[in-house]
Length: 406
Image 1 (tube, rainbow, N blue to C red):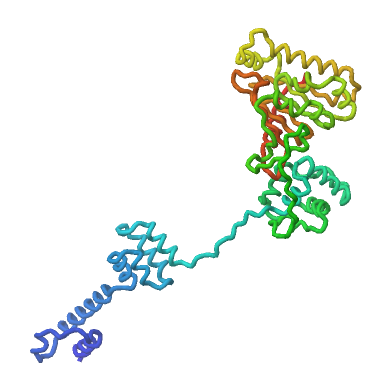
Image 2 (cartoon, rainbow, N blue to C red; image 1 turned 90 degrees about the vertical axis):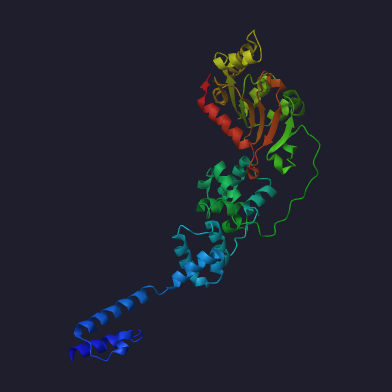
């Protein structure tokens, strides 16, 4: 009875297995050992059939190997693609490069919404340009005027030059501090801070375009007509050509701040009368002069480069320093403090003249050429144009910090 029960159990477990021939031809009863052996054989056979039955991912992998990854992916549902890619990347014998995989997946994956880029300027930049407030010095003045009306304690709290540049180029994330927002809203009534720092989508009247004027001796009338010139308003082939277009009286008569750096600074010391300098100093003008040290090594190197053998540059520079020192000694205490004389002993690279933190004249020193023969660039500070003025303004300030007072 026990043997029959075991035999019946084996028959129930593997009903689909063929009956051996000797079992078909024999009708004798099976012994318990034979029934148990037959049961074990049937179990092992079923396990082998189950293990080697192809799974869905195996079928997919076989399709990848036979048809190639792009064609195989095209036959699948979008939900099956990630698992297939993971499976395929684990096999080092793929016949297609990964670039084709990436392109196919990118093609089949849902495409994100394209980000719309705009080159529209910040509204604040547009408004400053239309009111001719784009220079840093002018902006600071208008900022103080508005701050005085809003809260006198905000006066003098204008942003730095670099910070203003970030405002106008759209690099600022969010809004500036509340104090800045209050002053800007006072500068542009009817405009909120959020509007000022958004792209210029509102209708803003376009300023009238003027034809390019003829060259004028007045730097205030110079206009940069070509955008690629940034804040450069004029270029001259030599200092003499520049002096003809910009006489010293035009540059200095109404100046409130003069910063000069170079070698002998003849444009200020030889080209402008002492009594005019005294008038400026008495009226509150600040003048800073940075000479190449007549006792240093750099001026001797420059003389050798220009092939002077009689200490011409050393003598001229010492003479100009003496002239201004004598002038300073005749001034009252307050006026004398506004005339600052410094010297530096470094390789000379530029002759710089900066007037009222808005107008700049730059001359490079060329090899073996006199300074008077060097080309001259004229530029006006235009923060909105991202020009050269801040570069040379920083050069002067750094040289001044390294220099020694006379």
